[in-house]
Amino acid sequence: MKNIKLLLTFFAIGFLVFSCREDHTDPVYNGDSYLHFNFDKSRNEFVKIGTASKDVQITYGTIKPVTGTHQVKLVVDQTKSTAVEGVDFQILNPTDELTNGETGGTFNVRMMEPSNSQVTKVVVFKLESATIKNAVFDTEYTLSWKLQCLVGDFLGANGTFNYAGFWNGTGQYLIEPVPNVPNMLRIIDYPEIGTNFQFSYNDEGVVTFETQNTGYIYPSAPYAGQVVQIRPATLPSTIDMCSRILTLNASFILTPANVGWPNRVEKFTGF
Image (cartoon, rainbow, N blue to C red; front, side, top):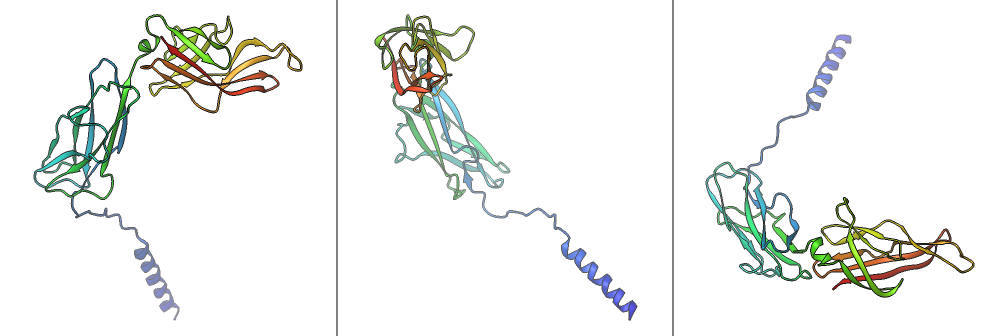
């Protein structure tokens, strides 16, 4: 009886070992290749002023390598696009060829320089083939772009700007680059004479700045002697290089009392 129980135990252990063994065989996909945009599904670009155009590549892929030779087209969904083909953009190679064993390719699109910095051009692309089906995912690609002016366009001939805002009412100020610091400008004698306000900008027109002293000392009780600081406000600050407009959304706050005038608009327009 003891030997029978021992034998049964060995059988049970063996059954568990074989039952729990992992199957390391990779699954094999045997379905259709299916087309889709295999990387990004959207892209935001800028075309610098004076460059006439900018070329970008749009990639696509298939779920598995294709068998044989196939033609794939990049087509425009005109119902979702504001950009006009032949005017605002060109598809340089509207048809791409996939040969046996390939898993994708690229299309080249040329974006034309917009004439208006306030308008965003948008085109929505789809894939089309007579011999390969489209996947049910990643079937659209949205390309958008705007005109990008440079800091030299913003500053103009002499860097002089008209000012209108809360702190000083109206006036004129000189804006110039901060030496040896990329993407940083300063407003001379703003907010007060002897104080130069510094701010950074990026290609998207977003302006950021650190809390800075205005140079103004509050004269009246109960805050007499406290410094007024300029701080970022709730709304973002922006710069439009093409229109030559700087909009600062700023708060003017007494320190250390932490009271003052929040969320004020300071606007500088080049002339």
